[in-house]
Length: 611
Image (tube, rainbow, N blue to C red; front, side):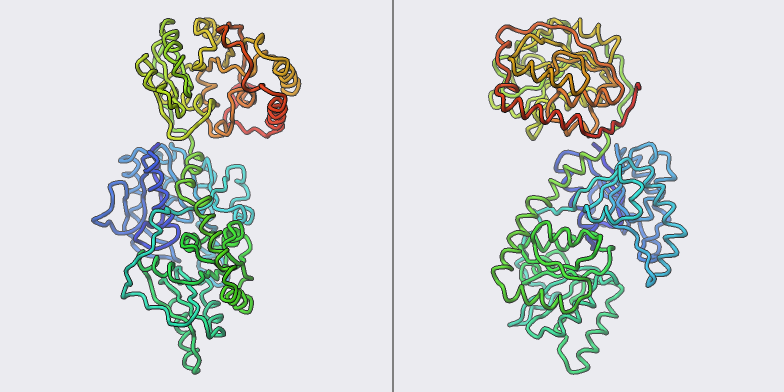
């Protein structure tokens, strides 16, 4: 898939959104997608070919204003030919996409990093939001097919997202763990920690919502502690003035403002600190990439319990530290004292932080979840392919795969694709020699995942019909002509052999028919014929969540208004044995329970073709 990200800035420009965007693009490209980025800033000689920067004419209320952004977006779409636009908000420059036909004709996914919070302290921002930004923001959200929110708490609290909850998916931010290694070099640009004091670190843009003024007040009352604040921003002068006032009164501030730091300097500070603190005071702090970076170094974290922010959710869900009421200086001092006094708790917080990062916040895993939110690329018009695509999922089927392929070829069908699902017995090579195209997924997919991969392959290559066939030689490919004739008057054909199986299977099928209303006899048959409309339904991300090709798939198709019929087929005698799915009453019970949940689920098919 070809993905064009539209972001605010890109490293080495600092910021959490910027770090995440770089890591996400890197993870997507490593996974095989063609990922590109369009951002603000001056082009650099070391920029990769997939990154375009647009110069900024001025800054207005923390927002880059770039008149050339629209024209550059036009060029980026023409140059990269993306299948999907990934819009990172807040960022007014994404609004230019509303004015371009080439942008509107592509699907949009919005990454909702933060609400625009208009406060009395920032009356200019409040005026800009209510008088301008909000209307375009709503238009972008209406156009978007999916909206990614970084935490459940932020989604629950976000007023702009309330009308669009059905489009939203919660996916946390993540980090590229490979770059989170400590730097051995002591940079001259960063002051050394004072001897004999607890080392408290905070990193971020020096802005009103970061709460650094709270940390300065906290440090004044903790003589055994030194707070180092790394970052630059518009509030530096105010924070420096606070520190100067304390020292002019003859007291030690116990605080150092060390300014902006590069990646090596930041890693050194994270590696050598005792605790990481983020005292943010508003929901503008929506997540806290700096906290993830501290977790990568196994550091205990103390953060503000900002209601509706993902920051306390991140620390609580990972067990990485302590949350403190916003602006409560005494509570902050008590939390820091706890970390200082209780070495075992500090170690446990750090261990939990590192483990949670690897398990839940690795950017590769995050990128896979983001990938599932992308709509399928627009499919080229159906070519005049008179034959169907025969899709054969296979795992360790070396004994039968060549014979199945030959039987299909004997029917005069030339287009066969085998989805080799982690075989270790040479299935893939045998399938190629027999005349099939072989796709080899990186991860194990299961039977239905392999079938869906084949269906998507068929759509990308213009096939109007797909036939799925087991690789273990159960079904007679000789029945394909009858299935295709039946498909002339319906959307889906099932090749049924209800005589096979056990008493348990027959009881389960009677139960399925009773709760679903289906009248088909062989609900689990993988021998099926789908027309293009059915393939469009089954290629949707919602179908990816299914485990088998049987009941869930049929429910999706029926909910989309498609017609399903069944024809009798024969099976090879050796295949009429015990069922793997219904091998025991325990498995029967589990299967019936899962099927009941499927029937109770709320289905939201994208397509409603016939009602």
